[in-house]
Image (cartoon, rainbow, N blue to C red):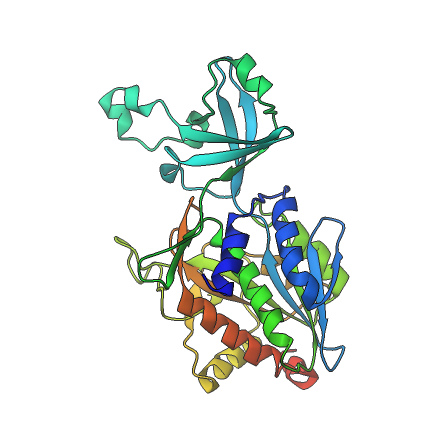
Length: 355
């Protein structure tokens, strides 16, 4: 396992659903501490300032720390846990999956289940909503479950290990949305230790993205007051069985993606085109795509008078499930592209993005 694989393992296996980001923040802090000046906003977003040869432009790199998960909603009289989602889930992927419940007494393993194996055959064919699912921790009574320390409001995290797949270039793990963005951020700052850059970079691990408030993006942008923002993300890859290219055109192994449109952001076109031109100069393949959803960029691009913003992402299969798959070459090319951008993004270039 090389250092990039170790980084991705540490980031993806760390727990940290929206509002409960402490564990992943500690991991990220460990990696960022040698790379720049650390601070936090009042919501808990972690900011790493890396000063270059000039204090401006102020370039914000944003990747959210929180992953999708659940919260304990109710404890039944029989000793089972009803739960509510934190972030967007595909219900069909949930039954039979393991989870970890983080209690004040420690972590507890559980299993998401439904009553479906024991219902009439017609009922087995319907999509079971999350409201009809529950978590079994092996308790035989409510009293036994309560003794375990489970409380309403406890966060619930998917249980998944980082795994290097057979071709040695594909990685299987939970939370690539957006731990792959955090991994990009760390690798970029590590790369900048050996390169001059005519700007000041603020790398931010934001909070509360997956529940849609974008709270960490809003507050950290107020702290930083960026001139340019680049959002680092993991994004849906469409190279799976049954998916048409016109519905989702991204493919593993074809390079990082520039998002040209999502529900709440159309990127600054001058910034987008500059990135495309740079990728051609350094011979890095990129993919252009649209996304049904939104990112921290939706909040950051509206900061103050407006911030030129773009989203650079690594494609990942099966995002917003217990496990996703990325391809190493896409990750490495994203770092190569971002380093080329940050080592040339000076005040004149930043000014060219304005209207």
